[in-house]
Amino acid sequence: MNSEEKVIYSRQVVEFAASANEYCKYLEGSKDINGIEILKVMQRILSFIYLRASLLPLLEPVMEEANEKTVTEFDWTRMHDNLLSKMGNNDPFPVVLSEGDPSDGLYTGSIAESLTDIYQDLKDFVASYKSGNEDVMNDAVWEVLMNFEEFWGKKLLTVLSAIHTVLYSEAEGKDDNDEPGDDESV
Image 1 (spheres, rainbow, N blue to C red):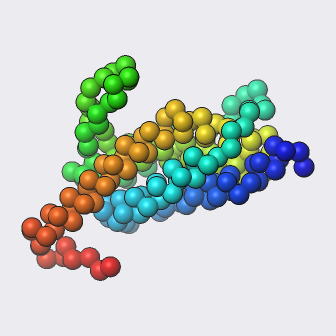
Image 2 (tube, rainbow, N blue to C red):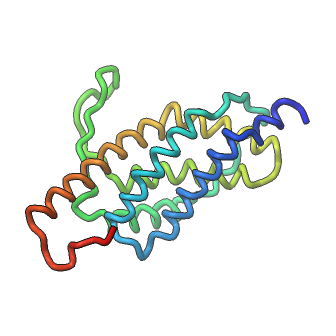
């Protein structure tokens, strides 16, 4: 094995691939799960994915062409719409952009959109990584890390903050307004 082959099978990469796969499988199976339960799981798994992504090794791409994308517009829309229906009024959240951001200011984010965007990058990674083709696997690791650094890592942190707000304001609201059926078993 050369050194790049060892890296794509390293513990850091395999554990990231496993957590990315769990994230995708959970969201794909969330049709019958309520929004708050989804957010409770997302709170835990997103933290873990962020940690695992931050430990990925920096590789150089080896192929001239980008890896094939597996998440279609239809797939994205179906996932987004399912999550949006589950989130209801908890979906929108305020996002304050950083000072250096060209679109400096405040805008409204969407939990469903953020989770779906992260899903798209992770699902594309998982599909390429599972291919067994070491060049494809190498470039999948490189691409997911580049996208993490530039795009979905920030999105993950922002949506995790929104999820935190929903979960803990939800808990406070239940204390003030207990309604029948609101009790959850722990």
